[in-house]
Each structure stands twice: as structure tokens, then as C-alpha cells.
Amino acid sequence: MSDEEEDFRIFVTDRDGQEHELQALVGWRVMEIIRDHGLAIKAECGGACSCATCHVYIDDNWIDNLYPANDEETDMLDEAFEVEDNSRLSCQVLFTPELNGIKLKLAPEAA
Image (cartoon, rainbow, N blue to C red; front, side, top):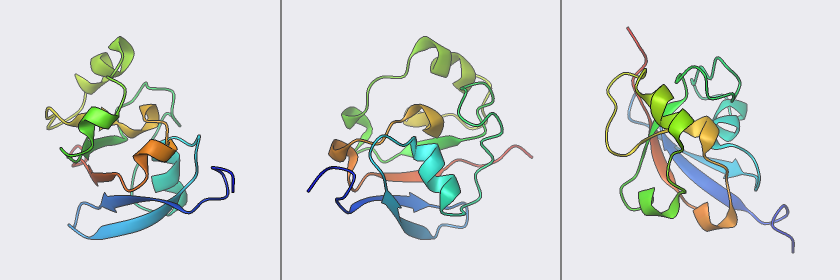
């Protein structure tokens, strides 16, 4: 069975505290997975790393499994609200088999 055919999942806690189990596809950005399942994530720039509206908090048990944020993502996070040590832009997190089961939470939206 290829990676594309396996049953991969991510777990996303929405802004109301409800956890959603979402089917994930290898090679997709986490932002695309969240958006395509209909959860409320703006992602205004569509994944171009130019808006910070796909800000999420990665569960502490998973943060070390991700590639470190590059300078462009770090600069964009400076524009986000309520940034934490585990903040990432979901458009910059590419889903791989190693991330199967990752847990994250949608960050608050700007008021």
C-alpha cells in the first residue's frame, strides 16, 4: 500500500475546544487538510506564507517532529496574535507519514 492509499489522520482542536479527527493526505499542507474538511481557518493567502491567518499551536509532543520554521515563516509569525513557542503556520507544515496522528489547535483569530 502506498503512502497515498494509507489511512493517515491529524487531530485538530477548533477554537471552541472540540477535537476533530481529519483524514490527511501525504504531501498536502496541514492548512489544506484543515480547510478542505471545513474547519474555520482563514488561510487568506492560500499557503503563500504571507498572512499568518493559518496560525496553529502544535502539540508539545509533536513539535520536535517538524522541520524548524524558516526565516519567512518566523517573520510572518511576528505578525500573528498570541504567538507561543509551539506556534506554526499550518501552510508551512507539509504532511508526511511521520506526522500521522499529529495534534494541533487552531490559534485565536484577530479581533
